[in-house]
Image 1 (cartoon, rainbow, N blue to C red):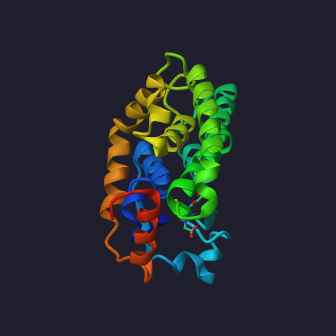
Image 2: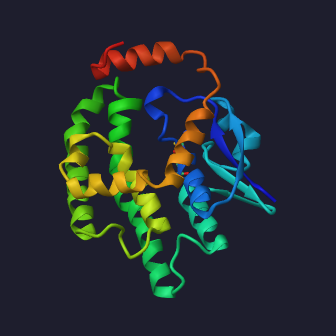
Image 3: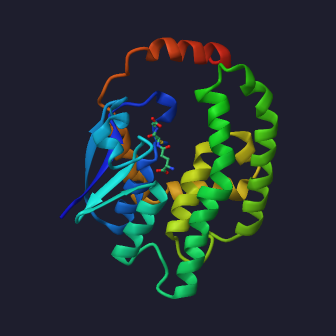
Length: 233
Ligand SMILES: N[C@@H](CCC(=O)N[C@@H](CS)C(=O)NCC(=O)O)C(=O)O
């Protein structure tokens, strides 16, 4: 039975190519399996029926063979484990690949999520500018440590794994930002991940899925955001 994931039918331009269903689409493409997508309009993620699948009212979710899962990391690991791909066969290698999935989602992503909050979602709030320097310091430190451990390897631990898929997904949120670009090895690692045909197919699929329309009030929110973040309206 083909698995079904959830994704949005519309997000603002800055989020296109970054919505977390991309990680799940990428995993399916890497293991060479098709999947179905149930698209949600903005707002539908908070409806009771979706919250039954995802308690926080977010995407993505996965449904297959009577199993419902949320959290992109858990879904990617489930796909890897059940398909016998994206994870090494030996127990130690698997444990280390899983370790990198946690490093990506638990050690690196939080500061990046704070950065997105301060520069995009809450760019207009009075506290965001004040918070930014300490958020950037935390990202700087994490990127330095992450780059140091990668060294001159292509992937973190041998072959490309679920750990790399998630670490690259997290790092590429900062794509083009000097904080990432000042680590050429990390920027090259992201580029290597993005050059994988499976990633390209996943990204195309996400982008072509945005066929919906913005929710009421979006134009006003966007104008305010651009004004306070200094972007041209
Ligand atoms: N930790 C969750 C985060 C999911 C998440 O942040 N989803 C965002 C899209 S990238 C979302 O659905 N946001 C809409 C909302 O929170 O209302 C995961 O990795 O699956």
